[in-house]
Each structure stands twice: as C-alpha cells, then as structure tokens.
Image (cartoon, rainbow over all chains, first blue to last red; front, top):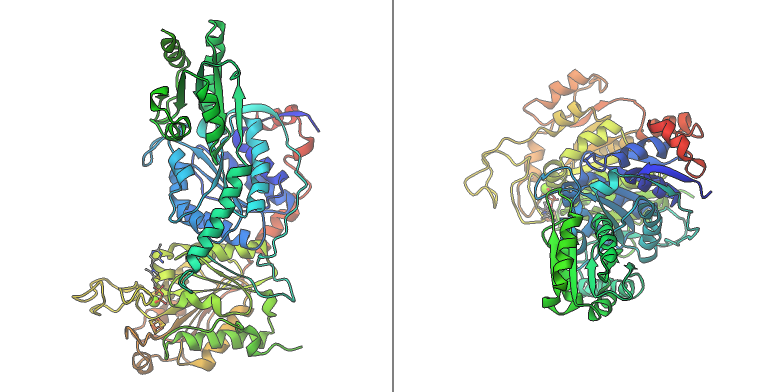
Length: 350
Length: 285
Ligand SMILES: Cc1ncc(C[n+]2csc(CCOP(=O)(O)OP(=O)(O)O)c2C)c(N)n1
Ligand code: SF4
Ligand SMILES: [Mg+2]
C-alpha cells in the first residue's frame, strides 16, 4: 500500500481523482497539463468512468456542471488561458451551489503567453474571473505527493460545502516526476438530496443559478453563500511553517516558489541567518491570522512569487505594515533564482 | 399507472410567456409526447439555455437544470453521461442555440449523444427585447439593426445535415399534431435528435403566425428521410419545408463508451494501488 511510485504531477492528479471516486472528467487540451486528459482518457474507461474531450473549455466546464448536478464527482483541468474561458461556468456552478474540482496548471501570460510554469493567475484563482459574490476554495500544492493528497481532499471539500474547489499548480509542478505514495480514499460519503438523480417519490429538483423573483431572493441566496464562505474561512485554512520559531525574516511563498525559497533558506541558515518559510496551502481562504502572528515577531517579510506581485497583496493585508513587506518575483515562465532570494535576505541584516 | 399530461406540469411554477407566445404550444406538445411515451417524470431531465424559450426547464415536474447562455448542450452532455437512465431534453432559442452556443451542436452530433434538442426559433432575441438573431430575415428591423439586417440568415437544417445529426425535423407551433408526432419520434430516437420549431413571438413580431401560415409546405408524400441528398435539396428550397428531414441509426455515445469500457475493464494499464516504481518505469521509459 505504501509503495512509492513515480509519476508526473499531472498524472498523480489523475490517479488521485480516480481514487477519490471521480468517474466523470471533461477537458480540452492545453499545455502544460495535457498529461491529465491523456491519463484520464486511458484510465477512466478501466474503472467504468467517462472521459470526454470537450470541444472547448466552455463546453468542458459546463459538462462538469451537468454531471455534478446529477450528483457525480466531476472534474476538469486546464491551464491559464483555458481557465479564463471556464470562468463563466465556474460562476454558474458556484451560484447553483454544486461541487466540482477544477485543476489549473498555470502557465505564463497574459494572452497566450507561453507554456512554461507561472503563478501569474493568483488573482484569477482567488478573486475569480467570473461574475458575482462567489468564492472558489483554492489549494496550492508544492509537490507531487501533495498534488495527489490534495486532489483527494479537494473532492471531499467540494462535496462538504457544495462549492467548486480549485487545485492551483503550475507547469513545472505538473510536468515534474517525483516518487510519491498513492493516497487512500477518504471513505467519506456525502448525501446529495438536491441531485438530478431521478429518484422517485420526492419533489422534483430544479437547479438554477438564476433568481429573478421575489425581489430579495437573490440577496438572500448570496447571504446563504456568504455563510458557507465564512464557515470555510473558519475551518479550512491550511498552511505550512518551516523554521519559523526563531525567524527574524519570513519568506512567504506557495507552490514551486516555496520549493525554491526552501532551498535558499537552507543556505541562509548555514550562514546563521534566522530565516524561515510560511507556505500557504490554501490561497482562499488565506491564512491571514496565522501569517500576521508570524510576521509580528519578524523584522522583514519577503514574498516570493512567479508573478510580478499578486499574492503579495494578501501578504500586505495580513502583515498590516507595508514597510515590513518586500517582494521578489519572476514572471513569463521564469523561475525565481535562489541566489537572488539569498542576496535579498542577507541585505536585510546589514 | 399511465402518466397523464398533468404529471409533467410543474405543480407551482406556471409559464410566464406573453399570451399567444408560440412556446406554449411547444411546451404542451413536448409534455403530450412524453405522456404518450410514458416517460416517468422522475426519469426525465430537462436542461435549458437562457432566453424566453430558455425558461422551458422550470415548467416541468421533473429534474430540471437552467444553465448558462448557450451551454445547454454541454450541460446536458454532462448530465446524460452521469445518468444514462434519464430521458434528457434540451431546450432553447435561436440565439442560444445557433449564435452563442452554435459550436456545440456539431460535437453533440459527432458523439451522437442520446438527447433531444428542441430549438424554438422566433428569428429574434426575445428575452433581451428584440435584437437580431442568426435567423433574422435580411432587411428586418431589429433593435440592433435599425437600418435592416444586412447579414444572411443561417440555414439550420442544412447545418444539422452537414453535422450528421441523426434525427432532424422541422415544425411550427401551429402544427400541433405534427409537432407532437415529431417530438415523440425524436424522443424515441436513439441518438442525438433535433426538433426545430418555428415559434412565433407575438411581442417582437419578428416571426408572426401569418408568416408561418403562408409558406410552410410539408415534405412531399413519399419523401425518404434516409436520403441525405434529398434532405439537403429540401433544406435549400425557397419555401420552409416541414417534417422529418433526416433519420439515421448509429451507435449512441453511451454505446461507444460502453464498448471501450468492456474492452479495457480489468486489463489495467495502471492499477492505482498496486502500482510500483518499476512498473511505472516500464510504462514510461
Ligand atoms: C453570457 C450572456 N450574454 C448575454 C446574455 C443576455 N441574453 C439572455 S437571453 C439572450 C438571447 C435570447 O435569444 P434566444 O436564444 O433566441 O431566445 P428567445 O428569448 O428568443 O426565446 C441574450 C443575449 C446572457 N444571459 N448571458
Ligand atoms: S417576448 Fe416573444 S418569445 Fe418572449 S414570451 Fe413574449 S412572445 Fe414569447
Ligand atoms: Mg429567439
């Protein structure tokens, strides 16, 4: 059971989804996540599931909408430009209070950009490109193991709160092969009395994201959604602390940037510089409180991203002291350089 | 127990279409067709797009999904793959189905997914109060064509034929008996069926009852709906012919998926829990 196996991040997501009981997956090809549809195309029929290559990302997310409405565990995956196209569907799914899992292996933008990994869609993921007061629970793994584990968890969170959950990775993470242990199914089951299952002898279910009458119905619906979001903020924040107990300097980074930061921290610690890593694992809900506590004890907080400054806005909100917050980022498919992180942190001391 | 027309009507939600709207007749004909086929209301799913016609799904005493503008077909595809046992109907307008969502019809046809798609064409965007649609008549004055529509209208039947949709019929809200018969055959058809209904909008008057009364001949006696070239010929005629244009038997999406599943179940390219590093190396190196 605990055999280590070797897979690309993208494939690990696919197998983990199957372990989680996902039998309906719809996607449109885009690099750097093409291994997910390829894996699912091969694997899903073996377990009696359905893979459809959709005619567009719009079609794929709406197929997820339909399958989820039927009570199925459904997933789609894409990369940045494709996620842009899915935004409308994500807003409708959120409005209809349906669960689903969306995987985004980010690549460089704006526009077609390039196919190398990037983190420049933090805003898109956490602020949503779709319309309305809705939220998507966003999880940002940093290893193949975590991609797999979090994919299983994502399905449970989606079902528990009846909301879309996004796994936010990047091209490097998706393409990288690492040994990992296949996750176990959680064993949790969820009642879905709202589903379009055709069950006899109960009131028919209508699923709609439209609420026209009476006048205050839409506001009431939104207030209900907000209650769910508050519950998620209270219960589902995930983050990792690394060498923070005595840290004078805190690096905040997620996903691939966090891995690079970690190796920089190793070097800096050898020099006796007290630096640690705060790694948010959920980007929404963001660990504001936890980061605030850590940053109160620190002299400087450096945010490292593969973007020109997106998550750093949440870091500022958390730290509440702009003079403490510094930023280093590379974008367009370029990786932050460990030496540059080291140079920056060294400079804080003198 | 036999199902009655009443069994399909939503107990509380009543249609809010304008009095005289062509869509009432379509709703009625669909529900009659369902009753004649004895489709159980709890085994029925209705998915609709956005528009006046898109309100369709709310009026059923069944499982309903009112989705995204133009995306009723992909939503229904997801629903049908997850619940193969449900009879799934899709409904929407000419704008929903042929403009914003036009790209999906070809792909539902390629899969031959077992859905019945009812398009209510009033040659206008009615819900948004009268803009041009892909089937608006050239020269017609609309909110977005104050000097007259200068684009050519689509020929939906010819489009569906070239997509190889496996059941294609056209009718009107005036021909209630014919509509009911075509809908019954379409729902019974195994595969992707389209019933294209010319359905007047009395408010925007883009398509009136007089318009369709004057030139809607039926396909001639002896017309062979398995002859695709004949179908194309009639699709391109000046007059708007009504009836079953084309019908073809081919495997449905589910049959196609099932045959793949049968072939590979157990053969296992990759058996999750028991897979080891060396097996993976073998697979990938
Ligand atoms: C993404 C999006 N764009 C635009 C609209 C506004 N809208 C609603 S219905 C519609 C057109 C409806 O026309 P049709 O499909 O012909 O339906 P009808 O009302 O004529 O029955 C439009 C443009 C929308 N709801 N969503
Ligand atoms: S505006 Fe036209 S299409 Fe809409 S309900 Fe009224 S008559 Fe029917
Ligand atoms: Mg219309």
